[in-house]
Length: 444
Length: 88
Image 1 (tube, rainbow over the protein chains, first blue to last red):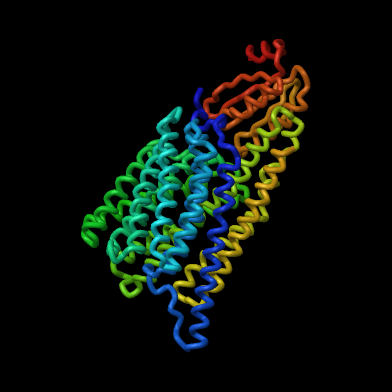
Image 2: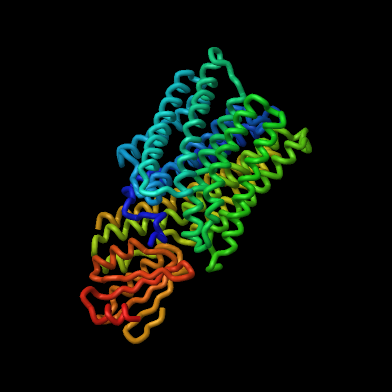
């Protein structure tokens, strides 16, 4: 009988491997919060001292927007996803990523260095720092992608989750190459010029490919498992990741070569439809939960689906020309909705389940046959307290709303930054508390 | 949980992991001799099999028509229980 053949708990990476990523991720979002508040203070000071209007958030092409965004996308989102990948790939595929702890340490440290140097290069404008940031980021993400793909090819069995994860890694490699080129164009524009088409190319492979496909694949496992729902339809699981991947190819190349033409619009429509359909499927499954108890992760998922639909509506309005005068605001609002409302909601929501589950799994293994110790292990709700998760959800909603408001009312930027900082300080506290608990259990 | 004559019934099919594992271990730790833990689960609990085996239990798994699984645990070597179980 292979009812549960999709999961194999014999292959679990050492606990510090995923947790080092989860522990670092909030620090970058907190830094982004600090930067936002500083921008807000600078704008306010300009208004008070010079009587000028606030000049924030006028375009997505501003350097301030680019590095604040990458503090979140590289430092927080990618950090969480890479950590989760080490865990999920091993359990789903029954194979650990090659290289073990050494590879995890290299990927983690180079990602930290790359994301930090990205920030320093962008703020200082020192050209060689762009090259250095590019080196650390491409090394980290290439090593990770190749090791991830090797573990998937060696998997004991194939599943739609693994296919989706493999396509996500391929997307990561494509996104990374485009991203590195963009970074070098920022540093060496006099030699390389600056072709803005690469930005949208990079963006679609990053968000719809690397992030979206990994979320889709992992959700096939974790939604039925953690929320006690029926499984996603098997045909849907097999078809969706492939259609999404093909749509990304169509969108990225048509937008690059035929921007504004029918083929580019069709590609975008297909991609949005795929994610819209996925959002509906997630919502319907979550409504079929057997136990209708309070579940913070479900609320995060629903917030993500709502944000996704608002994003889709904004995109349709943008394409139809209904918001012609608001094009820049529309692109910034869309970005916040997609990154903070959809992606971060899903990731930090899943962390509320993954962190206590992993901790319990590892603490149970530390007991090594001492069954009285197993009996005394803390329960899930004691490992990660519901009151902390509930508070974290509320802070997340407040941060999201303030960030959206900030685009229309720039004077809100100070408070938005503060909200992001407080929200992720709480996540840092939550993760640190659990890490201390596991560390203590291992040492007993 | 339902305790009958020599049988403890436990349905964990609506619980999220790792609650089923913790509940089952709690019962196995205090389960008297010649007793069966009759567990209904959504999926095969491989980590529980391993721990239960280390604790000195044997098990038998049956796939139910609705996709859930029925697992029965008993103390190793209790052939009387095993015989009655396999005859049911």
